[in-house]
Each structure stands twice: as C-alpha cells, then as structure tokens.
Image 1 (cartoon, one colour):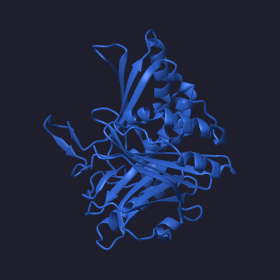
Image 2 (cartoon, one colour; image 1 turned 90 degrees about the horizontal axis):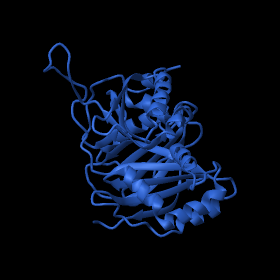
Image 3 (cartoon, helix red, strand yellow; image 1 turned 135 degrees about the vertical axis):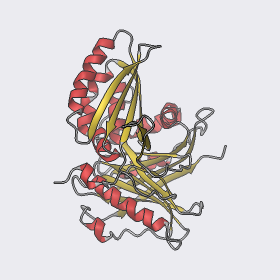
Image 4 (cartoon, rainbow, N blue to C red; image 1 turned 90 degrees about the vertical axis):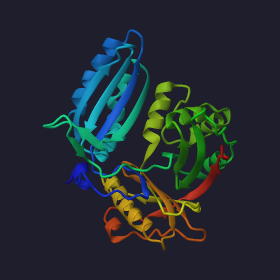
Length: 353
C-alpha cells in the first residue's frame, strides 16, 4: 500500500500555474509553526507534554524534524517548529483522530495556540553559506482571500429542521478589525452532512472567533445542538475545541480562470474510498488546473476542500452552466459511490469595504 507521500507528486520543483493561488500538492517541503502561550506556572507541565508529543510525532510518516524554542523576552511564549516531507502527510496527521487525542495533554497548560503552515520556497545552506536551493520555481500569487470550511453531520431525519435553522439567521458584521473582514459564507447540505464554506480577508482565526461571539450566530449554533451526531457543549472550552477541530475541512487547492468574473456557485461532494481522500483531492486539483487553461471551460473558480475521506469541490460556473458529476476514469477508482451536487441552503456575501 502506498503512503501519503508516495501518492502525491515526488517532484520538489514543478511548474506553477499562475491561475493556481493555493495548493498543497506542490511537492515541496512544509514548515509548520506553532505559537504557544503557556499558563503561568505550567512551564514544566508543558515541557513534559511536549516531550511525550514529540516522541509520538517522530513516528508519523512524512515527519522530518522539530524544534522547541522559548522567548527570550517573555518566558510564557513558546515556538514549536516542525518540518515535513510535504504538506499531504502533515494534513493527514493533523486532521486525524490520532492527533486530536495526542494533543489533549497540551490543552491543560496553554492559554492560546496559533498554527501556521508554509511551503519551503527557498533555502540557504549547504557547502557555501551563500548557496540557495530552489524548491519551487515561483511563489504562488494569491488573491488575498483565505478559504476554509467546516463540516459535520446531523441525526438522520432532522435534515429539514436543521436546514430551516441554518437558513434563518442574521448575518454577522463583516468587519472584524482594521485588517480582517468576512467576504462570503456559503452553506450546503447533502443527506445529513452539512458543509459551511467561509471566505475571509485578513486573519482567519480572528474571523472565526469574531463569528463565534456574535449572538445571532451563537443562537443558531445552540439551536442545532440537539440534532448533531457528535455532541458538543459550546459553554465548555474543551468540548467546543474538539468539535471544531474535527469539523475543520481545509482548502487544499484553489484555481481561477483568467477572467475574474463571478458565476453560479455549486458544491460537489465526492465520497472517497477508505484511505483515498487525499489522492482523490489531488486528481481533482490536476483536472481543475488543466481546465483553467481552456478558454471554453465553464469553470471560473474551483476550491477543493479535503479532510480524511471527505472531499468537497466548491465551483463557480459561467451563468447557465451545469456542474458535471460524471467521474473521469482517473477518479472512478478512488470513489466510493457517485459524486453528487449538494443542496445550497444559503449564500451570503458581505458588502464591499
């Protein structure tokens, strides 16, 4: 059986399409930075938890190395950096139940954490201090929008009531702070699965916290609590943390056609065979990248979200075009059922700043 690293491109240097603004499939190494604010008096507990975590992470396929650093100005601030062979093996681990259980000891001794992930584009070192290793021909030219999604399931039979609740709420204020604002939120359902796609300019974490604090949003979240398959208590920090960790559906690829127009938004759900979610997402990314070069393609924008074997493709088509759910031969072997178009519950854009 092939590993996650073997399933993705083995090239460390590959051409970068100017139309792809985000992708985890570049094949270059990944640097993960975790900023940690430790509770007063909990330094030793934190160190012990880190040592345990470090030993476990060292056994994860794709992990290369890690470092633990302490601030010279504020001893309660720590920095954990790790290096991975590429992004896919890290994402497979960080989105797993194994990871959820592995990091629990850290939660008792930290006030706050912030995780940042970076592809290694250039590197100095080697025989000469001036040597530079090119790992990626060109950097990605992003559009300034951060894309993220959440997914969860509700109890069978409750779908209609959940859809009614989720469609009926007042939009939160778009402005989060001077540098962050909400751009768009789209919510879809297929069967008992809910997918909420979020677009943000600025700081994603600040935006998610801002939304969670809004009374109108909190009321909706409380209203759907009785229907969730995974129970949660939003008044309990650990319960809420675990729920939203498991609900995270990261964007792994985004591509846009040359013209910046907006079209009709659709979400397609691709049920992956066990263990094939990442490979399925990569094949979809390759197809979308190729289609973006075709002027006749009906797709204006496409974002692929993936976690474990849940793969969702959010697309914007030219007006009047209908998404094609017929799988290409390369996809058929990776699917555990037919790709389906999800039902749009609500699609809300924030007014321009």
